[in-house]
Amino acid sequence: MIRVNPLPVVPGLPQPGRTLVVGVVNVTPDSFSDGGEWLEPNAAIAHGLELLDEGADILDVGGESTRPGATRPEVSEELRRVLPVIGELVAAGACVSVDTMRPEVAEAAIAAGARLVNDVSGGQADPAVLRLVAESGVAYICMHWRGHSEDMQSKASYADVVADVIAELRTQLDEADGAGIAADKVVIDPGFGFAKTAAHNWELLDRLDEFDVLKRPLLIGVSRKTFLGRLLPNPDGSPRPPKLRDDATTALTTVLALRRVWGVRVHSVRASRDAIAVAERLLRQHVG
Image (cartoon, rainbow, N blue to C red; front, side, top):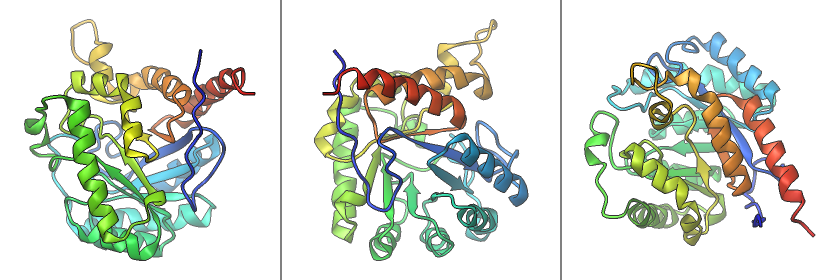
């Protein structure tokens, strides 16, 4: 029998009564899945509007690639990439998240109308982000993180990946709490692919229920990740290319929606909305 968990509420964000869909808007030249396609502001804005039309609840706009080995842009360049995009998408009525580890970028994005800060470092790259979020009152996505892109995969060593990630996230949450961020405005992300092997990612997915101990909503970002490409290799054994991993991503969205996670961060919004609709219809069989 399917267990119907209540969906958590995060103040100030959409409350559709189902798993939310966070659409990815990469304003970068080097993101692993679509690097360069939306680098120019007008292209990124058009892409964001398309995702909004497909049913995205939140648009996550980022100007720094966090793929393994990526080089960080200057702060001025990150600002140049994301600010015009955020401004236009907010003006179009979108709920926008800024994907950044930098307080300067977060502050400017919030001023432009962003309602969430998605910090993949969980406050570790620059603790000033935590203080800024606390002062601004916006929501905060705190991801498990062990280091920057250039060397994070060298840190993919765990005694028990689920227990270790939970323990480290708990420390990060304590720091967010100490900075003054309201607990009900914090979402956690286990950080799939960040200092994680494919086996680690599968173990995290298999044991997601254990994250309930942290008492925070879960955002899951597995869209087009390499571990899916390795599951579905090309005839020569190489991982399937990122854009050909969307079907596998949609399959995972269905599983996650049945688990009633708070949100999924995806590149293909319409497919995920469809998957969630199917999951919700099944879940209604077990209500009442």
